[in-house]
Image (cartoon, rainbow, N blue to C red; front, side, top):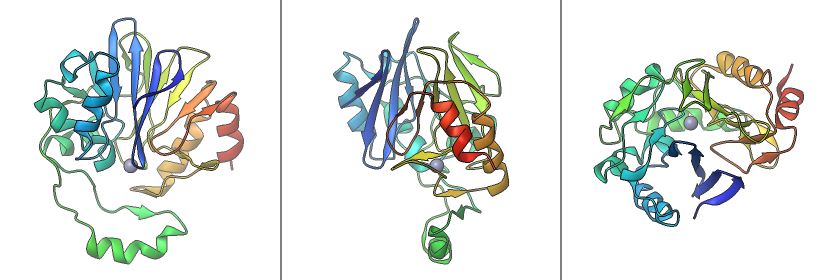
Length: 230
Ligand SMILES: [Zn+2]
């Protein structure tokens, strides 16, 4: 079920990943969609808010990975609107590709790199979904959601700065917040990911929410800056 983060923002933990429900003055937005089996869970959670997928004003997907874009096709089969993504990830999600190579695992997981490269599927894993590639840097969605390009984890990864309650950064996998701030489990481009972690430290927000882990409340941007600055 969706849990309150700040007024107008709710978090749905689906296994290891979070999806978010965010209310603008114009309607309800879903941010990220869980994995390919998450669609039904999300539909059930939306009912708690008297919403169906068809009631959503829009969907934003932070990046192409299966645990963020995987539920999208199922939701759209139940009436959900087209999703907004960055062009560099949108194209692959349209074709059902939900993980791209190379994907460099972050230490200490890098010991698993050879195993993953050999055994994990690298072919299209999902159903094609409807995506528009309008979520580019400094684009403002629905008057209040500011798109910040944060490439590295994937080439088209985006974060979202919601201009409410002192600012809320919805960071996707730009970093994690599991027993403290930490890097994502892996990256397409390790150096660009490091630059993106620094980039999110240059904005101001009180709260950080991410794809993996719990919300970080209170002076979140200062904590991000302190943690990730070289
Ligand atoms: Zn990811």
